[in-house]
Length: 109
Length: 115
Picture 1 (tube, chains in turn brown, red):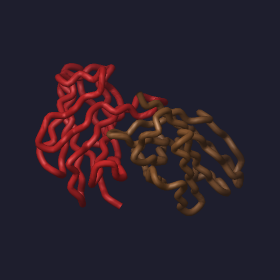
Picture 2 (cartoon, one colour; picture 1 turned 90 degrees about the horizontal axis):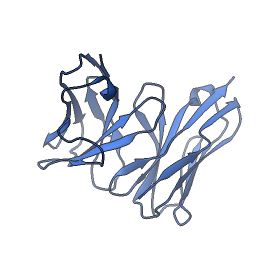
Picture 3 (cartoon, each protein chain N blue to C red; picture 1 turned 135 degrees about the vertical axis):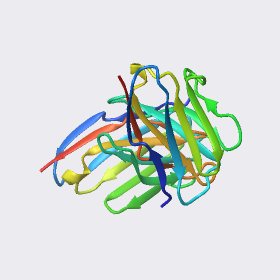
């Protein structure tokens, strides 16, 4: 059974710091891995999608890496801003999407 | 990017009534849609996989007679919560993809409150 875990569960940092959010999964047989952002009471916004054959994807200040053999992905946020405050979810896609437990990020001015 | 729309975004109902939530893919056809539920401060949990023209596949622990899913067309799936109770109060989100194994696009979510 696929299990997805995210560390840390919560993170509070001052503006400007570079951040690393971690995601681990137990079964490496995945199609892809997606990182999402969720604002309180809102739906999900897709940030980055990494196919199983890829090692990393970048979008603006975000960079996500994937090491399928070790069951790990990291989301790197450069020069964090208060607007980055949200819950970040990773999800692995097998024949269905399995979500991690999420990391609640707060960036204060 | 592809757009998935959910309606209603918020609904309040009395215990014992039924509520229908719609999920539409606005600019693409989705043979498969997924329904998730999220309780406060918890992650999303997959409830069921909805396939166009066939019966939905439910995850373990999800009552299929309580959560009726209909995927009548390639752009619309509906989730009906029958005989709703306060414990069914939750945030329900649907998602869809153009092809199997591809990127999933999510609706805005529907917050159900059962009084």
